[in-house]
Length: 89
Length: 498
Image (tube, rainbow over all chains, first blue to last red; front, side, top):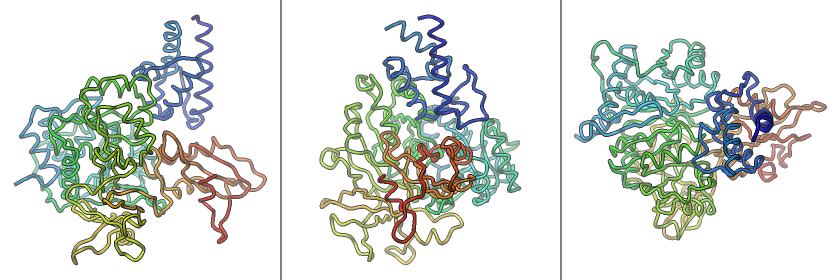
């Protein structure tokens, strides 16, 4: 795992979130550290879609207790989670 | 005298178990005595602010300790609380505040600008954004309500697109809570996890039944991070988990949950929308030691029926029998009692039946009909059911166009009105289409003005600006023209199947 991979993941995630969720909120300038739930970008079903996408896109298996704010609450959090999980597998 | 009002029930709970946890919220925990004291404090402050017995007070709050304090504070002040979906938008909020004729609106800091703007549109409404800091200078004299006084006006989507205010007394609410506590066999040892919004009847009754049973309500603000919910189930030693099909759909799809022990979890309840038989098997596989109650209700009487879990194998898709202390029957088109197997409208009788729709006599008359005695009225649910030979109930369908998405009601007309407001939209029909997680997903069929191209994202965005989140279409499908019935009306059935 290296920084280039992280940047790739970050770009992919942002594109996914922009295409699927952010267009509903044109007033929001989303930063990578922003709280996706608190800003109302994603709701509970949005997170289900996002977790499915992360599993499919990066070939990861996400356990029940891993679907938390710490791991999925922001773009930064997801990038770190993907990076950690990949390095374990 | 036994407790007859919401305020008295809380008082009795605080006297019996003062130190027991009443509410464990993400922000703070309240014991029974703390919740009781907070209710007095909020009631006193509301009275000082001019709230009078019988007034309506709107609550625009997510699941938090403030919401519990506000509910019991308003009730103890003798006013009626009007809980509103915290994702409500300004224009609709103003309409509801105006219709309910509220004196005050309670919200949180995040929502204060939106609520204040809505309140300003209609004039004299006091906006309170910090319930936990409300103080009253002296102990005011509270005009404690009687059990026949109104306790709540709960807005629910109506088929015309205008929400209707289900008006219930303390007696309606304490009776319904008592009946539910009885069939779920809830006790002070229960710890219920509520991920459903307290603004929604099914969520609200988690608080009311917990207080009735002196149990503990553990609040989560929604269901966005199911991992957190799983951790809470374990850490808080949860005994009961109420859900809607979407909640169970997400939980049963999680990896690793079925292998967890969860030794404390003794029951699950489903309402809001029916669980298909396949989903019931999944829930039972994921939670093998918990009993599953399939239930059916509507805001107009809270809960209608429940299936005793020992009947789940014999009749998995039934919603069971009338809740304790009530009666139900099915009427055919002539008003006669339907024979077993015959489809008709479900009618409900009991002390849980609402008093009517707030300021809407026509809608009230359509649903509350003459009952067994000259003074009595029974509730025509508007929903079609059949009964098997042993009397167990099966939901067949609705008589109107409303449908449930994520367990919450969607009025197609309300969504259609927003879409008709978008330039370039010529025709719209909103229907529910089957969806694994949502039960039904909101699908908008749109025919643009000829020669125009519309953007699906833009249409969804307009809906998101004006509607609560569960009403925003998941899909938008464009047509040159919408299909018509031979009478010239838009053919919704063709679109639902398409």
